[in-house]
Length: 117
Image (cartoon, rainbow, N blue to C red; front, side, top):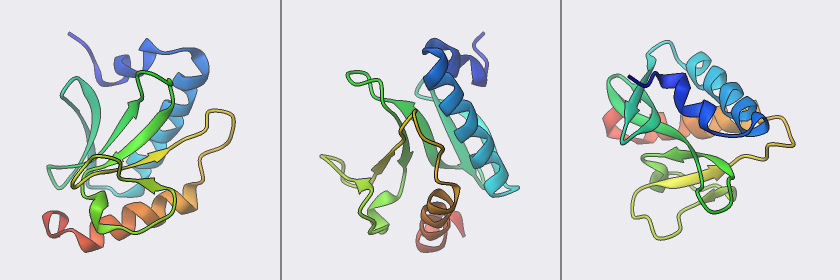
């Protein structure tokens, strides 16, 4: 049976390190966040509802955070693409994750979405 962090080990060392760092930031963000595997992906639940996913784009191998209610947030680094409700926040494996920026986005989604209140 696949464990949560086994999902991250499918990638090269640089991507795995980025995802592990992201994992720690997400878990530290709110004491009510817990890890889960949803759709064979790393999902973070807030109050038992899907909050964000830590994912890697198949074609480019770029890691990103998928905000489940990202459509409620206006930010230049969030990309909606063809999605109706969700937005993505790409990470650069060559740079440290901007903790403050990530936490602002997470806080804004938590406060604007009815699902997490």
